[in-house]
Image (tube, rainbow, N blue to C red):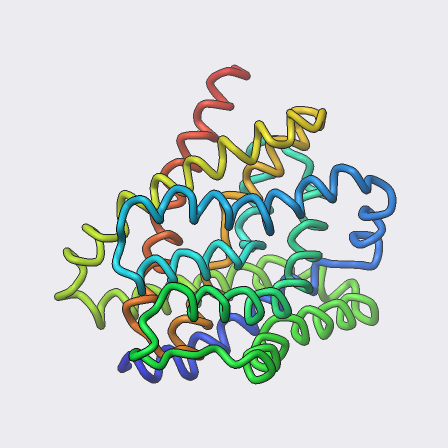
Length: 286
């Protein structure tokens, strides 16, 4: 399968399946958490959608990365709500209901914020001669089709067929994640000869950003007097990004392989500090 086919067909289908599976595990009660615990929810949303992009720019800009790689990281930072964050929150003994609710909220908001903010980043960071643009309405429409609409469809299926969703929860959530791993593997294989260069350019920045996002997200929540369980959850939600959405923007919409490698590498390398964090929590609780 060539890279054009992966990005044009396999990735959108995979992201649609991921968001549909997430919707199958959501109910309106998840959104009521916003009203029940407004301060905690607001802390998590601010950490994901405001603090992380600011942190990403502050950390990565001084590294003097190639402009397209920096933009790739910034688009990633604008794509919170990684589906695996719920699993990691569970393993960290975090607040799973908070994790699921945050993922649901930001998944609804990001189709609107990404084209708005990423368009400004493109115009400010890239040479105008490259002629790379992210038109707001077409980008919004594409993101809604593969993110918000499948979530709504999944929620409708759960509302009318809750037993079906419960019985097949494993397959509805795990198969799309396997599909995403295959898409990422396909992108890596297609760019295998360039991987040493991509790793040299994105490896350290990805590890640095993922680690700092965990630390800053946790202490940001603690500073605002959230309890340790909620703070762990917010830290994980801040660090784990929706690589599928970011790759969709960089690879499918912008059709820029160089930008795409940043979210690809982050999606892999963010697991290193995450597993270290989980090991540390387990060691200190043992």
